[in-house]
Image (cartoon, rainbow, N blue to C red):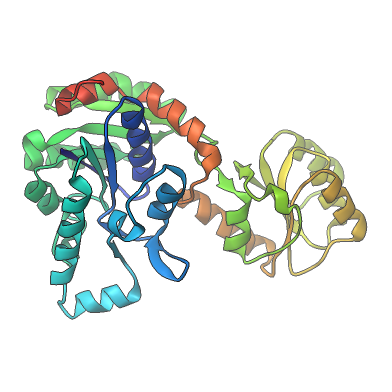
Length: 357
């Protein structure tokens, strides 16, 4: 069994995408794969039981037999932090290692979702570096390449510390103009330093999209219609605060969008409903007219009323998109497609000593 630890250089680099996508590919190639997230930072409750959001999604959609508390044995909550501040971290290490050993049985590869960089987990008494050393794991570093110096410093430091434990690096969420630069300048530079680049994954609108259900939840909104479309994916958020003529031109340019506008702007609301819109968010606690609701029902577009003003609603939605924490079953085909296309699996398997089955 080979533990493969997926860490990151900077926050929100898309470790979960790589964790899930690589696991799906390994399964397709005939390997017995386990998923492990030692420490979860996305607490949620499922039937009253504390769990991590990533673990819940995997359990629900990827046909995993192991219980949630084995996939992610430690979830960071206020209670957990208070325990750690009292220097009671011994139970954390013990719980993590016990579940690691349990999940490792009968697996070819155990994919481990780290909390962050090499020092992540230090507070709980088991940093990513400690975990890699203790389990003899291999490490992949993921980065979104926002700053050349920060990225290269961190990767080269990881190479110096991990040595042959470092399998390589995956650049993720990369804006199209940066892809050529990474391929032509960064990849050869890292190769000269003994670091292989396993993949360059461009930023993808669909993978970064958010289900309508998550927008409603985040905004604490009241859903008036469109319950059957809550799993539809929103790729863009647009604000309606202009004339009707401008709004129509503006809205027609973008599909798969949520439109945020004042609850008293029926003209803008109607314009949004006449264009490809996934969700209409009405701010200020104002309810729409029956004519607007009737049109929304005809077009199967969810309408949500929120108490926030427009600026606050936009800020909340942008925060949700920037974290990219939310998953949806609708994204799985696209995740498979992008991962299979952009990651060099022959090199990855060679570095791990795996042979396709």
